[in-house]
Image (cartoon, rainbow, N blue to C red; front, top):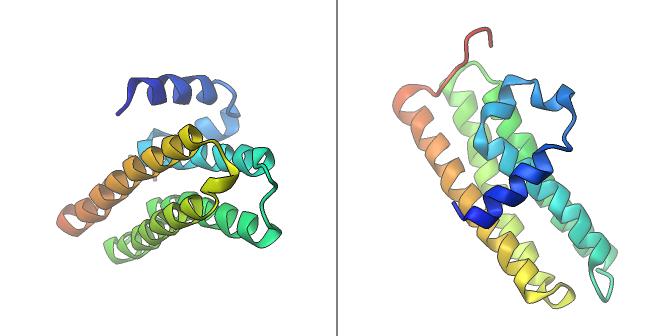
Length: 145
């Protein structure tokens, strides 16, 4: 992972509520990256110039939010089949987010769009790994979950 991204992520994490970071889900790196991307997406939509069409902004936000939601839902499922299903949904949303970021690239600085695409690519690799891990082992479960 890019050192600059790790630094950015570390700074962002200091502002996240202890109510969220105290959940065992927070240990999952893919979840943390997805949450970070969601916050970035919100600021990207606000900073877009010219402003994004309302439908494009909504589609981008929904695709990015869906990544986080499906990772968290899959993590919380008891059976490998359920976890696999939600991680598959997350993967679809990762790919959709790429398309939406590319569709709004004229509204954001090129370096900002590239950072988001790089972050989404990292998320795609992590979600693919999680999906494959569930298929091989049934997935990781923390004690008490």
